Image 1 (cartoon, helix red, strand yellow):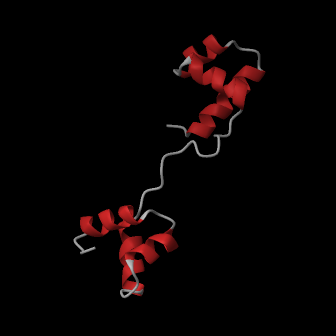
Image 2 (spheres, helix red, strand yellow):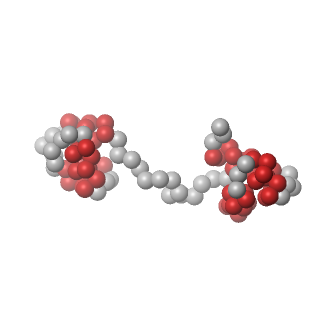
Image 3 (cartoon, helix red, strand yellow):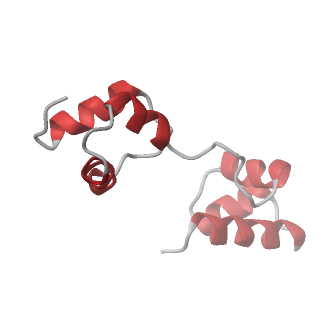
Amino acid sequence: MSSERDRRLQVRALLDSGQTPTEIACQLGISRKTVYNVKAGGVERKVGSGGKRTLDEEEVIRAIEEDPLKSLRSHARDMGIPKSTLVDNVKKIGGRS
């Protein structure tokens, strides 16, 4: 299976070769909307188009073990996440908030 970027490059190459969006969509098994999106916007994804960052449990454990006396609010600020997210993750791994 090819990556999204590879697929978009493939679409761009076929568009440049003169194929119609309908032909490309049928050939690659993708929607015509995808072909038109590549045609209009290029092969690179827009900034912020990905999903939200997930908080790694190991990152939480490491941060708290490095400075256990530091408040969760301070840890959250240093990690660039809301305090409630950190509290939820601490509870999830079995800690107390």
